[in-house]
Image (tube, rainbow, N blue to C red; front, side):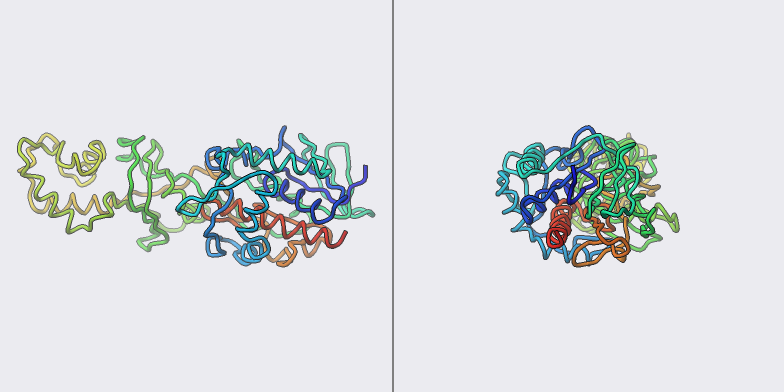
Length: 411
C-alpha cells in the first residue's frame, strides 16, 4: 500500500498526530510504525497509571531546552483546545486545584484506547513490532527501512520519544534516524528523576516521607528549590518535590564540575529562630531523653537521625542536659540538613529526557527539519522538556498538532 505520511513512533505524540492528520485531511493515508508489541506503553504509565495529560497553567516558562518551540506549540494548540480535543474522542477531563488535568476515569488506558480507536476509525494503519532501522531520501520522498521491508512516503513524522524509561521503550537509538542525516543533537540527560546522595544518614530513614523544602546548590549557589513531599530511599532522595527540580542535577551530572548538595528544611512552616525556641522548651519536658526530643515535631526516626547529623549524642542522654549551643545546632540541622549529591538514578528512573534534536534544526512554525524537506519531528525527540505535572504530555499533543497541520497543508 502507498502512504501519504509515515509516523515513526506510536507514543503520545505519534498517535495524536495520526488523529490530527486524518482530521485535517480526511482520506489521508497514514502509517504508524511502533517498535514495541503495542502502542502507548509509556503513556500507560504516566501519572502512575492515571495519566496527567496536561496542566491548566501551562506556559512556555514551564519548559527547558528550547522554550521557543514550546511557546509556538502551546499557542498553536492551547490547553483548552487540548481538552476539547480529548472530549471529542471520548475522554472527559477533570482539573484539580493544582492545575493538573486528568481523564475523569483516572485511567491512562482510557486515553490510549481513545487515541488508538479514533486513529483506526479514521483509517490510520498501525503496525507494532516494527523497529525502523534507517530513514533515507527516495524518489517518492522518504524511504523508511524496517528490517528487510521498506515503506515510502512523501512525508515522514519522527515521534520516537526519548531515552528516559527504557523499561517502557525509551531509547537513545531513535535520535540516530535524524543525526545520521546530519542533524545536530544537544547532550541528553535525565530529568524528573530520583537523586543519588551520600547515604550515611539517609539510609536510616528510608521509606519515610516528609513535607519539606528542598534546595539544590552547586558550590553553595542555589540552582533550584521546591516544597512538597520528599521520600528518603536507600540510595538517596525521591518524591515529587525532588523530581520536580532534579533537572539541575542531571545537567550537573554529565559535566561533574563543582560540588552539588541538597538542603532540606524539614519544618518550612517555621524559621530557624522559631525552631530554636521550640527545642529549647522541649528539652524540659519531663522524663525525656534525646531519643524522644523531637518526637511529635517530626517523625521519630527522622528526629533521631537529625540529632545524629547534628552530632548531639548519645541519644540516651537526658534531654534537659542539652546546652544552648546544642539546641542551636539541632535547630540549624532541622532547617538546613545538608546532604552531598552524587548523581541521579539515570534514564532508568527518569520520566523525561532533557536534550534532543536541536531547535535550530526545526522550522519553528511547522517543525519541519530544515535540512530534510518532508521530514518533521514532534514530542520528546526534540530538545524540549517540561516540568513535572502534565507539561510534557501537553508538548507532545501541541507539537504533534503543529507538525500534522503543516503536513496536511502540503498534501
